[in-house]
Length: 536
Image 1 (cartoon, rainbow, N blue to C red):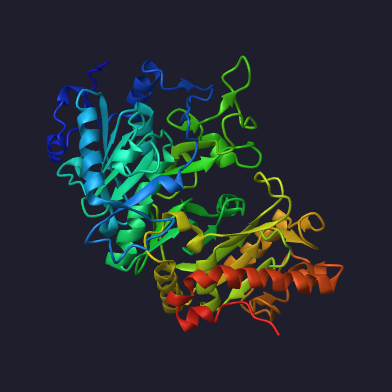
Image 2: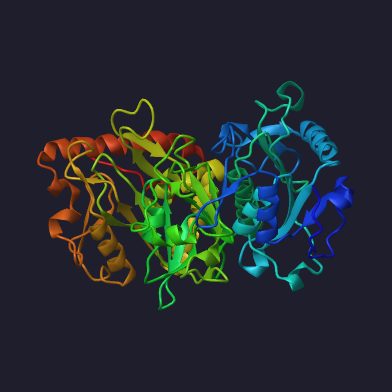
């Protein structure tokens, strides 16, 4: 199928350099409407009653971390943190797979997009993305930053992504674990993705690249976080794993959204890497998430969702395909989003945790050592019922709140974080959105109105002049008062009926932190190690 749409030309070097010269089958930089027409004609998806394009990602409805590789070569051998997260692949295997994929593409319709990552001009990474699916090219239009017609003149590619969901690897010949793969070659500046239609592999592939290039080569801290800006120009950053409230708490109607997931922090700004949002939609309701709800319109994508029978209305409670149902839309679909997505140096940083053990204070202030230690730890807890086999709260640690995307050792990011925190006198707060009055099953979830009140108090400086006391195990500073929050709520121990049980559980959680941190100790400075829990 070929449709004669006008394409936006750029002076990009010919795709023939990649071995692709079938120009009559190349559709470059098509608009969302054109890509949606292609997707519908090719039966890649259907429209919902709001105009969004509904698609299925097939066998894979999430990333496959064990099938993500980085090519080990002279550049990466001694700089990448090799292990279960960054799995090495031989150069020869990459070259072999690359040739097979290019040969496969030579008679296919190709959807090519020129885009970039990094809203700060000095740190932008120009991308050329080659897709065999129109809807995935629309995903790339939504998620990456969109060059103007003028910027496309003279566009020079920094990184190329080739994504072919229908191309499957031969593990015995190609060196992969199974048929699906995502491979990053930092030297040749190419990402290969095959055997999976989950579009998040594209987004997180480039995030991983930026997590290597910016800290390693530019001394810029890359962060897995959300960020917003107050009317006084004060930037706030929110770190947190899934279920901690990162999206909800950063979506403040009184503040402008810089971005919801990936950012960089250079000498004078915090900037979004992306041009869109990739939000979870399981159990989505207009009342709770109006911004996301209203963004799901023509031009947006919804993945792996289902309709109510006999309608084109999405049933967001349906998880027949996966609990990881998502939507992708450009950031300007959010009414209070900033474009360009750039803010100043942060005044306040929030580490969000949903502590199901009821130990972590609802708000506490961290010193530099504690901030670096907790940054590397990246703690939250899963509760019973969230995953098969979990019958009681379970600790979860993800280094720098995004271990799966870190090519460098976590201490590299933590050291940069500490330097910036000290240089700019930034407040770092630990926020527990989890349980109070006891662990999961005994206590209750922290009220959202209290959490919002505590974050607002921190942002507005109301906690700058209150008294603080030290936590007995974690050593963090707990404010003795906070506007619009009952005093007894601020002390987790005071909310427990059995104080001895609290003390025991606090020491148990502290020991979990220490055990988790053993794998980082050999690389961590004494300053970082000083942030560890301790007790008599």
